[in-house]
Length: 264
Image (tube, rainbow, N blue to C red; front, side, top):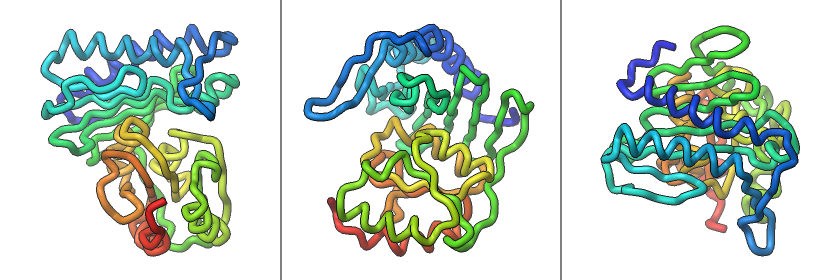
């Protein structure tokens, strides 16, 4: 891959370590814990092992760097460089045996997403970017990622994890947009953003995201020519309501619908 960021080789090391830790737990019917009272937010031994492996490498190689991970929380997050980790994005897919989960590894520099990778070790493919370029590697070889042109909703393919992530006022806005698109697909988690970067889809609309759900994906989409913002056009770095688009013209069109949605 032609990604020039100086920390890219270390990013690849983190991805390998995570995959080696996680894969022994995939399709094993292992124990599942629930992190959410009054709901279902699953976590597995694979989640914990993957993040622990990455944290160990970061602390050994770059002890001054910060870490923000889904499973073990924040560590030195006032640092200029902060790694943002989601060992298994799509744990519901993971526990049901579906290979539509991925490990998200992002790097913030000066609180901006600077480097990111989504790696799926079971199918052995990775999507990576540094905001300037983005690349795929896997069974189909290695190739540069480029978003596709799509200026109208009537031509757009839209993803969201599930409409159930939206609160009522958000869902009404989402439904208006989905009704205008060519096709909508659910349940793909981080893969949705990578398909936008690959030029196979056009939009992702989501809400309620955490930083570790999105930071790694921003440099991939931006490196492929797309754009990621909040619903009001602000920075996506802290998560929340997120809009990702392959074509900036489509992004502006959808923002007009979403920016008016009141806080839920």
